[in-house]
Structure formats: structure tokens, C-alpha cells
Length: 247
Image (tube, rainbow, N blue to C red; front, top):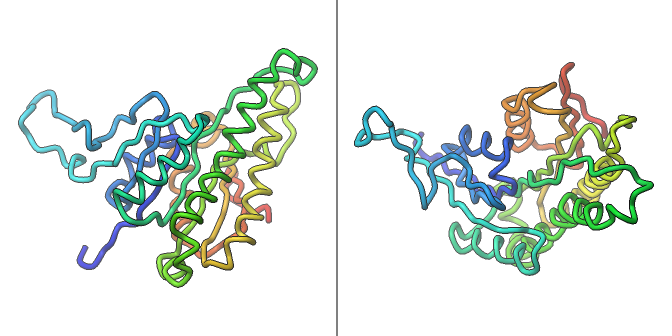
């Protein structure tokens, strides 16, 4: 398409089900910095290409839109800064921060916090603190200097939350996971408030379990619709019945 310019997306959790689906489906629309911890997403990147096993020399269309893959454990000191620096060095800007990395485990009952404390703390760190740290790093390294450009390019923080941050599901020992996603929802709303001064939006998508209750494709499509829209400060719930804004 003549004149089409890809948006630059810094995506965490690229090695997970949702992150990989986003890369596979939308690499032709976004220049994606695909941050993964252990598993490289099964998509073309600067370090791997797809091949047709029946015709290894044939051209594979997906290879025309490789992601820029970055391995990082975002809980390690200095790694948040590193991935932001790599993204800005590679593309000179970030238009969308898509926080999809998460610890989604139900680690156990609250009454076992003495034993499970390290797992609980790490879950809160990854699900709440890391998205905030990424925003802070992008703000300091880039966004705070370019409010007019931010508005023109519709820059956006997009957090992947969960209906567990909106509903109480009893009997599953998911209290800390639920609390982390509830915190992320409110954090998103405060991000929208604080970042509005520099022309950056912030929204969250809170899907039910995928692919069990909603398909991964529906989740990815909803994320892109949020990015294409003008809303800010919204927490959009997505379940089997459809979508609704909870704020």
C-alpha cells in the first residue's frame, strides 16, 4: 500500500501463545520488537527464517516481514532498560508498547504465603512492576521529548490483563494472580491520566481464558482494534458473550 508506514510495536511475551499469534498475524502491519524469555516465537526474525519443507528453496511470503527478536528476562536487573534501548536503536522510535508478558500461574493459597512468598512476589513484579518500568524507560528515553509526535503517531500503551482482575473466581487459589491483574487495570487508568500530557494513550484488554473460552485470534483482533481507535483509560473486557468497557 502506497504511503503505508508500519507502527513500531515493542511486544513483551512474544514467546507465549498470544504474543506469537500477534507476531504471526500482524507482522505485515507492525515493525515488532519481539521480546521473549526462553522460547523464540515460531515466526521469521533476524535470526531465523521459515522454509517450505516440500520445497526448501521456495520463497516463503512470511519471511518478508521478520520481527526483531530480543531475548530477555525482564525480572533481571537492567533488562527493561536494555530492551527499550535495543528497540530505539533498531527503529528509532516505539509507537506501541504491548505488555503481554505475564505470570499466569495460580501458585497456591494465601495461607501458604510464607512458603510461596518468592513466587507471589515474582508474579506481582512481572505482572505489575515490569509494565510500569517499561513505560518509565520509554518516557525518559523518548516519549517525554516528543509530545506533538506522540499525538501525530497515536502512541499507545496496551496492557494485557484478565477477567480475573475484574471478577472473583473462587476455589482456584488465584488470589495473587487476580490481585496483580486488578492492579494492572488501575495502573492502566493512571497511565492514561499521566501520559495524556505528552499525547500517549493507555488501555487494557481483559480477556477471559484463551483459547478455552475465547479464541486467541479474538484476543489479538481486540488488541489491534484498541490500538486503531482513539480511546484512552479504558479496560475492555472480552469473554464468550462479547466485548464491553468496564470504565
